[in-house]
Length: 116
Image (cartoon, rainbow, N blue to C red):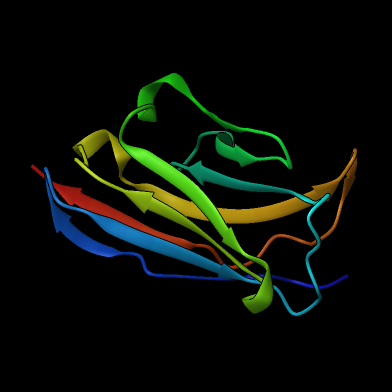
């Protein structure tokens, strides 16, 4: 099973911005549901943002601050994160589905650290 590559994480001050990228080694198509997750140490992975063919959805804690988008030509999707808070600190992962079928095994993730 293919593995996506996440990038763009780093250390940023509270109130700052980062843009995460997720690049797939296989072609993504418009019917794929694209996702971003995050995970804190010792915690379960949390679904943060979803991009379907018709809509975007976000967990309440990031609404109005994060934006998920895609570039099919580059097999890449993004998570623009603005007004970052210390509680956004986590390892961020991406994945995709076709219906209920997950398309990728989990990658290494990218660390986001927000200093207050």
